[in-house]
Image (cartoon, rainbow, N blue to C red; front, side, top):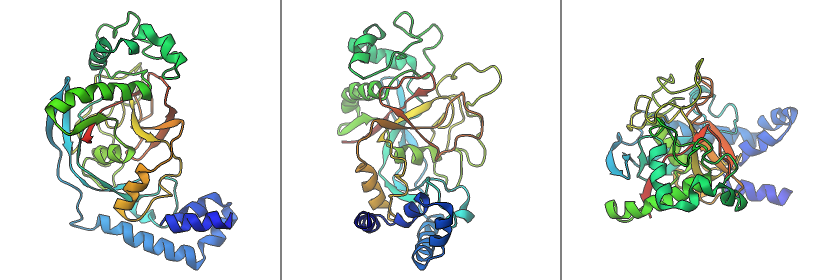
Length: 331
């Protein structure tokens, strides 16, 4: 156990934060006052605070991108994301949270301005009959979806009037298959790029829209994001909310969104205070049965979900609260 502890300390700048969280409260207080932890917290505050100094690079505004298979994309600039719970700057380095704020280097990419719709997903189904609702039993047997896959497509197509709604009841596997199909169209419009689900870090960077230290895509309030209200029974049309600073809509609310990453509960704690190192650590996460989801849904109370809120679902899970949007990145 001691050897393992030494390895974690050597590999992770934020190992003391991980150690503090696994201890009981009395031992947290005892260790928290030690020189080792106090030196760590001081260094942590200094390293994170530089990202909030005037003139610190956040990245420029989003730019219009291509439209492919009916999806409008926005250009997301490169920059250093402070990933995690950072909307109370006074608490950084004073309290430890599983959503530990840490810097991650983000390369430029494109992201769908809204979630993939029923109509856009149907275009994929037309050319890939293996993923049609009629083939649900076979997909379930293969472990790719659950019985709820496209459960509202009663006739094999989206319900009348639902073509502009976000596609839901699609598994991570189905979303990944859609991205593979879309890549063939992307290669013609953007040579050297591929379609895929965004990583958690890419998703959060895009959701913040160029803002730091704010809990919502528009700043201090949810704005017109589609969250629970009396009488609501499902999502609104994709792209209902106001655009954030990068021109993206519904980054919070409407439907949860699949991310590419395997879900690791303590990923933030096993990060670095150096953006490039944190980016490498994120890419090296071990595989896991669950995949990360972000953004909250129409069934959640306003104020419940923030840009840093994380969730997880099994890769075959299908639910009316969960959809996805597509990223375009260099291969």
